[in-house]
Image (tube, rainbow, N blue to C red):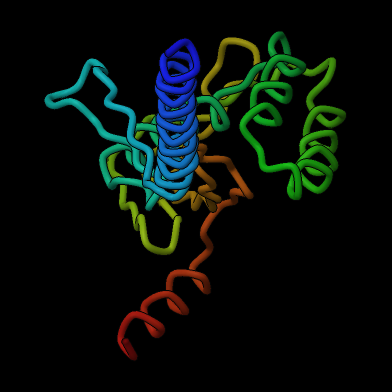
Length: 195
């Protein structure tokens, strides 16, 4: 009799152990499956900026509204400088640059920094318009570039500047920027006409 009770009890323990093992395998499989789904799924972050509507960032691409906001802030940062803020100006631009463009940007910014250091020349940009292309990751700002020497305004010229971007994951980084010349505008119009 003790033998049959012991056998029944060991059978019950064996069934419990087997069930626990199966449950552990199923849970491990679910964890692996959820990890794979989470790793391949597009990530999104909803931002609440001080604009007319909330923005959503997605790893599948940059939205037009987000590119416009970043371009606006970057244009004001890159195109407004004075001898007093040159180091901060350069460091701020390099902080948003892609690692690949960091060297060439720093070289070009150092030229400007060395030219303006010790002078009384400042410049500021008044933004008048903007075009963004989230597919090509480019943006253009148009406005007036003002040059001031000391406290006297010397020039106020209409200019267009183009910004080139890289978007990886959820990070938008600056690849380069420069003034758009008449030849660049004509080439862009020709390319746009062919498309």
